[in-house]
Length: 336
Image 1 (cartoon, rainbow, N blue to C red):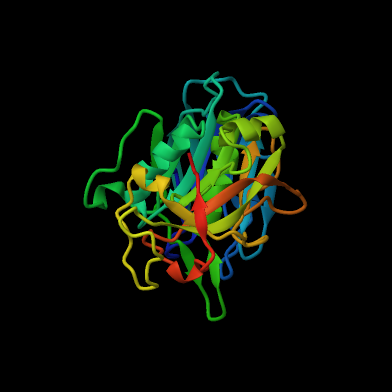
Image 2 (cartoon, rainbow, N blue to C red):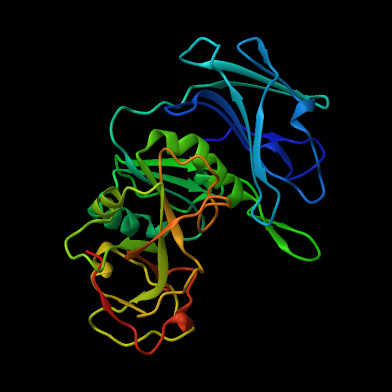
């Protein structure tokens, strides 16, 4: 999967939209969606854009967004009166620029799909371990988007029938003199909300080094727990964790290099007994969710249900190594 993006002329890393797609939403009907953002130094109004789909000019749209540190912005055109097609022809004109593209509508597969989506970069070697863990936990579709060009990687990515790879080649952070502002990740979450979630029953938004489990309910998978609770959004608190292989059950030094993780390593995970409170939580969304997805939990005004049984174990053995986060009283946990 590759995005249909519209970069603003003469403005590097500034986009009118980062993706455009037609999606058949079971709750909202067919829609044309543009994934955009709010920039600190560039402003634009979508009312200036001339948008046509299959030769029909579209004028009425909803702008759904929040202009903040994690900016979320979606421009949504309802397509209720337009005929259904196998592919649509899109044309967008804006301030002297023109983009033309063919869009194949995204439609639910008709099968129940408990899915996971993530944006990844340097931790791509963790994909196989992540895949095997979440397959055991009931995930049957993986949307894995690389923050760059897959062709530039040093070796092929792990492959499995349930994995759908995508590219999301946008600058990760925007920098100004006072702060860093989310760019690629915030737009990715907006895309996942409007493009991927309608194709799923539930969608978990977690990173490759984060492993959900239900430690308080032996034998219960993440999927079973989520489906039993059946909440619109279900959030798990995060516990720092690390792999300690049998030949050395001691904590690793703070400067230890990343392990080349493999699925068997998940049998040897130690975790802090205390979670990080409301910090670094991650959320699973049901397909009727109508709000915006934040990095950790839904954007206000949506509240979320925090599961006391669900845990998110964040491994420090990856390229993001944070071994100094492991406390002396860390204990073994079962992820299986």
